[in-house]
Image (tube, rainbow over all chains, first blue to last red; front, side, top):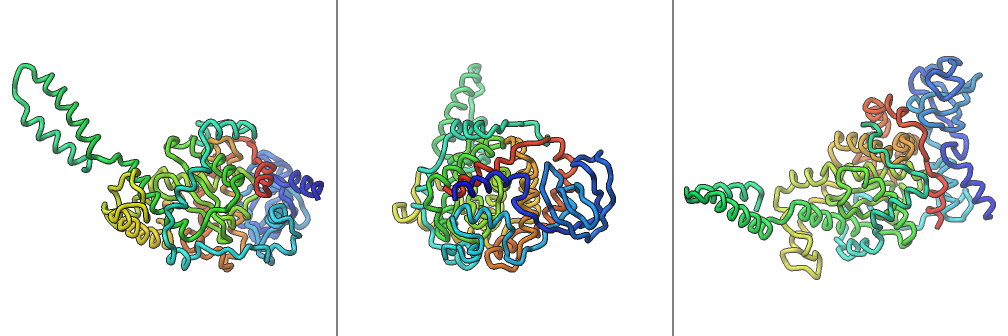
Length: 159
Length: 281
């Protein structure tokens, strides 16, 4: 089981955990590499169905009818999966619950709350707000945690 | 006392000053006194905002409790605070919590409380996506979207309680009355949602905050594409989709605002492994 978990953890990330299907929402240039100066394979018409292999930066690698290549992330729309959950989400849920993927739709704890009705009926709970204090972390803790994942603050990004 | 009242007080005081040669020292003394009066009477605006936020948070936590998993809660606090440190209000007492329910949503209150449901966490695939979602909520706090909307709904009445007071059964009758008023206004606002423009603004700002925190800048795009691909009729999405513009519309607006610039950020970590490991703890 641990090996399976490890394997699943390794393949998640920018690469999608499983193939997902999507639709091209506007005429899109399919390129050989995930760069705007990558060689043009062809232009995919709006409505083209594709399989999404992985993501690198702002690009998806897709399998289109008769061609494979990269399109900008923005031109793609995912289709709603029949089960109500994508494979990647099922993976995450399996990792969390330790149950098999097929139980995903029923693997809820039965806890409800925060539906519109629950919100309307809520009785304020000030003690629960106070209890959050014990879970808080300090600024230096947060900075160290970021450092562990090689995250570097970049105050000039998107200025 | 509002800042305007302090200004009026100051003006009255200045008019009463003697036209003596030592006016400078009188003025200095008066400024000193005015400072003391202000400190004694005016509750700092940020404290008022925090107190209001505590009441709003109490209302939301009345509808759903935090997950009883300190490690998970601490993980979300670390990611959230790291993102908030890149913003315009890094020194607020930011508090993050995962709520134990299946509905897919996230909430922010005035003063720095941010909640994400277990249902929304289950839709995410990496820490970069979590950072973008928390960044979106942090943006609502930074820009005081809920505070402004609540003031509009209920007027200034909601403010004025300092953070020193304890709401609920331990507080004064006045505090309990205020909590019940705030809860009423909050229930209306959080069921109705903010102005659409505030949501688009939070998508942009959340994306920027996540990028400044060093994450892959496409987290928000990925989350919105996931939400665009779900079966929107499922009841667990009902409140989210009622209170927010459609994901496709949010994507279009984000593309318009930042689309051509996200590549300039370059390749950054998505931090998937640590995210998944924290989810299964």
